[in-house]
Length: 107
Picture 1 (cartoon, rainbow, N blue to C red):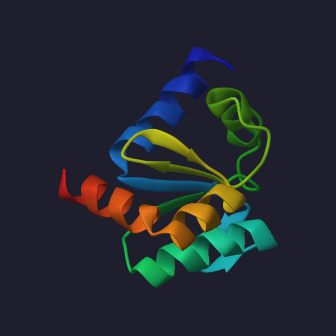
Picture 2: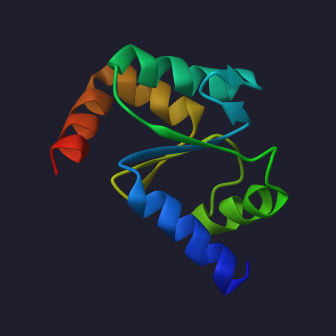
């Protein structure tokens, strides 16, 4: 990953309280896993930013290296990598995601 790409991803992660690197966007997810994450965040009713990795090959390749996580989608809350679809479902079901989101949006 080039320093420029790392800087670009850093900026996306740090300028948005919640950012999802996904296939498609919040209005039109392009895979079931990305759709799961969108549905969870929509249910929570929180603002979030999406980055369509299908539209940006450089980000698509680099985000996996950036997070050391091999799959998409990838969710960052308050600058911290949270995980993908399975992790989001688990956190949501346990009620932990709501708390994480509230803390992030309050800061």
